[in-house]
Image 1 (tube, rainbow, N blue to C red):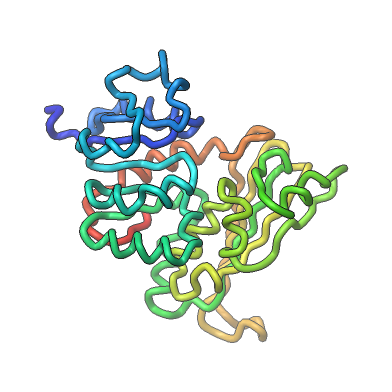
Image 2: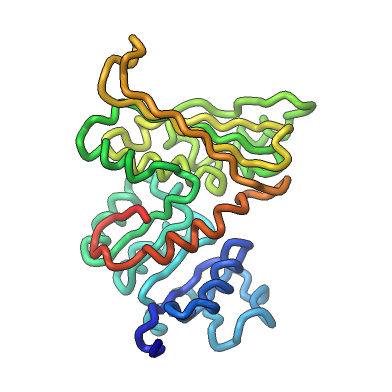
Length: 280
């Protein structure tokens, strides 16, 4: 393939997922790595060709990316999200940032000329949930995430509660709307944020979630999604779908191993849909 036909990808963040993506992009015949940025740029020395290291993220337009992929932290989208969308399509790896109503509004406005892509990740059945939301038949949605305490990166009271987990007993750290949880666990609950975006008729305040610290989960991250549709929920006659996803994960890891290939697959689908907000 002629190099001019390749999609130019800029990667923001060089943690474990960022490293995986960079390697996969460089091995792809259809993609071209045009820059890598990391908050601590010295981490890239000796690992990334010097010509590909972007030291000042605000200089990204000079490199003409087709797609910018964020795998760093929600703060990146707060600071650069609307600017990214002026010059390229943008794929958010940290959709918890959209729990901020003002930021979500700004990004939706900015996406009237470019595509804002949201990777489905561990949210199994996301397209089906969005279709139900479009039709107005989605009545309720609850996402439960269960991880080993060492895999959780939490803020505020949740951090203290998680640190207090002892023995083998699972502890429910949070039970409530997605919006309040996102700033308390910005690196752990992107699946929940995506659920709230797919279930747009319920949104961040209507979609419910539970976060569980379970010391027995030394090999897995578990995500349960429960969907209710037409019918009487209280009488138990409503449409109901319950999925359980077990993602292999080493103890202490924030991201399960199956998420890496899933994210890369989403990145490959993050094109050609035009302006607006898209699941991929």
